[in-house]
Length: 282
Length: 292
Image 1: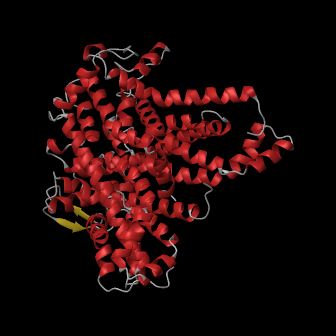
Image 2 (image 1 turned 120 degrees about the vertical axis):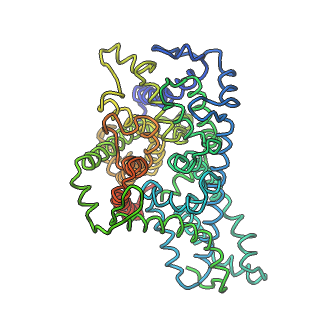
Image 3 (image 1 turned 90 degrees about the horizontal axis):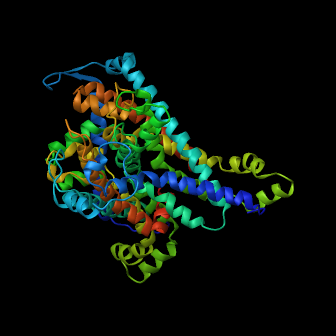
């Protein structure tokens, strides 16, 4: 602050509060709608204050199925999402950290070729190669499976870059000291590099978990068996359930449940989240 | 980089193998298939194929629907980027100004980042729903009959708002980081020379923020181009009458619903070209200097 102008300060606070209100309004309305009985959500104006059906609605969607969405309980969808998000996050971190390790600490033929091949994946988002990728997964018999949900999304140029960048800042005296003490490459990786990368791994985990949880197109394509639906795509099935009006209180309860895990992670791991966000985009 | 790397023949290959295998099987191979498909024409049952050269591309650029989809994508992307960036810059500037409550505002503003685009779409879809939506009800009170099922403009506005809303957190964080990296002494010097807050913003803060702004512009356009598929699919499904059919959605619907493999592949190739161009731009400018 350069000068102290109370009016400007008040102005800033008002603007920020307004911004927060606009940002949170959709969430509030969703929450409120998820606490009412469906009869109250048939025509406008809908209530703006929470009702008393909270436990009932949430219990119904979590355990019972929803017509139009294949009758799979939302609890099962959440579990599928969790498996998918965790496999993607952990898988991506695991394969990129070892790939980055190889690229930085070893000399081998085609080292840069490998690096560029990985780099190219940055330019090929699922959305632009939907059909052929689908075909590959179908040919491998991976439709309707957790492997099919996660493995094709596991290669990540950004994570490899991040680790490569970080390994390059690790002083090379470390390798020399480790070698002097008789540690081989595997030992050095496990006992020195891995502990040093802890904060980077945590930051990356937050970003990748959210990425995995929020996948939409991919699960939509490769799951035809309802028991593999993830919650983010399952909600679309509820909204567009043919020939009938969406049961809004259930849809909104599901929406709340679908955003809860990633939102909690962002709030609870805010420091790692910001670090991850800023570093992965560099 | 490293004067004494390990020497092993097999180990490095073992280490890069998983990443390489997945890249080859799920990225490079499908992408080359898309390239190959894009110069073939196949009947809908996949019984016969013939090589047609660039005919698929020529057909596309002669197809008014495709050109319209191109136009829609550009309008959509730049509207989302502009709306979201202006709002978040405004918020970031104010958050940077206030001393008290800074981190509380940040916590409250960043977590919509965690919401999936498809979910963001559903939330706004609900608020603007012509029968139960609270906002469409308010608009009706103000004399505007909102209906995104019938009006293309309304549907477009709906997806723009939902997409921009979700992106505010991201832009806010980067703008805030950018603002905090501007040396305070510059601003103080300007203040001593008699520049007021508005003048300081236009002549000092905004120019110094330009690397961040440019970076965010690219990121937001990429986001609007590709990540918003779920948002469109869960709400308007490209309608009404194709009014919100962005390119990514068209690739999907032509390929999976329309089964026009050659046409869909040609569109994929065009999209790939766009991503590659955007990535190159991003790397060339962003690598150079962004002040975090």
